[in-house]
Image 1 (cartoon, protein in one colour):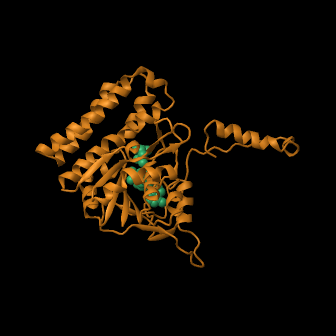
Image 2: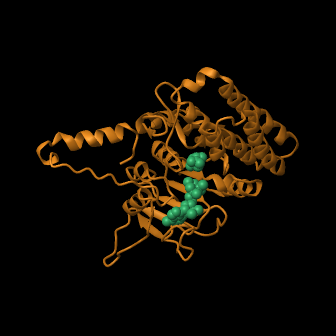
Length: 342
Ligand code: ADP
Ligand code: ASP
Ligand code: MG
């Protein structure tokens, strides 16, 4: 049995959260692959650096080092801490290299490369926390794991069959030996070997892609709420947890703005009938939500409500439209060429 376990930013955002999440991994049964987000706030910090003129790279790097090493010092000691620092400094060094490389900035995938650095740092930290609990573990980048992506910068999709080949070669043998790979979420590697991100919140999608590629028995999304709720609890505090829902409902709600799952999480698991559990890493004793092939009962109307902000409606009207059928197609083509999601 193989379970893919994904931990979001808040679930790895502090020494306590990391320890709690590592314990969940250690206690899990069977073979496990972990997919991890950046520590909370880190991706925003990297994007702020990219978008702010005059932002100081050294300050950003120093901030990232402090956040990760402060957490490490609370959890690891002696030799464990020393080993972590050796691996962590290699990752920081390659980030420094990337920022110092003036040519890299002209690369269309530079933004994807910088914004995905948080996952490269958190994966090393989680692997070392697991090792400190006597769980044999190894941090793996999406490149090393073989997650293959296609698409325009910031708008990647996984190439599922290529990813499966990669995972079967690099990740499956580790799982079979009882090692827990901790894989970076959020991005894959494109044909040219460049990092290509899956959009904000993309680690859920990465985890679904890994579950698909490994033919996993279950995908667990460990987050900071009790499960898939009847509404966003930050907006509707009375929202209640949904015990069970079907793939279609979850896919539609995620697509329409329920941030608990990246909009594209469901497709890679639904096609292989892999059940998904959404669970609270701060309350591992509670069962969360099970998403699977569930027949809707008669008279069931509404499972949950989702909301999307920052939407635009474009109205195009012209008496010509009726007489020029290609016109609508051309308008849509132009909008999607500009990278707008329809
Ligand atoms: P993670 O860092 O674990 O990926 P996210 O912040 O991306 O976590 O997603 C979890 C958040 O999704 C919750 O804190 C909650 O505010 C929000 N959310 C929106 N809609 C829902 C919903 N229907 N059920 C649960 N959480 C929701
Ligand atoms: N770290 C990325 C983000 O903040 C991906 C993720 O957390 O799922 O969008
Ligand atoms: Mg998320």
